[in-house]
Amino acid sequence: MRIVRRPGAFVCGIDAAMDVIGGKWKVLILWALNERTCRFGELRRAVTGVTEKVLSSHLKELEDDGIVHREVYAEVPPRVEYSLTPLGLSLNAALEPLGLWGREHIYRGAEEAGVGVDAGVGVGVDAGFGVRVGVGAGADGEAEPQVVAGLGHG
Image 1 (spheres, one colour):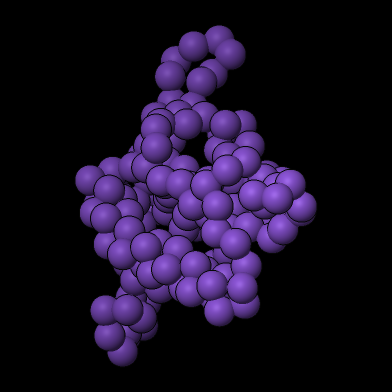
Image 2: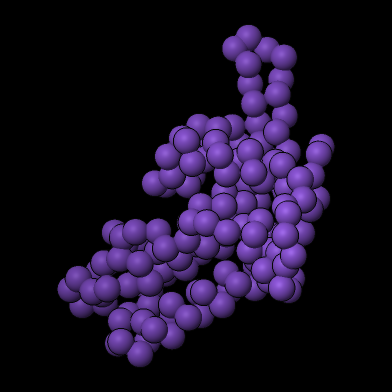
């Protein structure tokens, strides 16, 4: 595994970390790989909305940074699996408190707005890190906005 160090001086550790995980999709890729080893197509389905080009590019960058391991199996057809390296696992451990903060922030915003927080099933969109925001049935059967939390990536 080769690790590519990016040129330039960093102002602080956060700056260096954001250089590795910056962008819309990298954190979601890391979170999906935290669940299990995935093939490219599985990752594409797990990270809803990412294009093949961007996913491929981000995986290459994460591999170059020593965060993701790419295993190519000598089979016909070829099989490629992606997993987190020990460095990637430590990065996900560092991101976990950020995910908790995000869930608390969403809950606080929902409570301030008077939105119900329910662990029931609702129809909505994945807000990342296991949080779904959408519309579900309230106690009286009426539709109401909800925030539904789970563990890991939604």
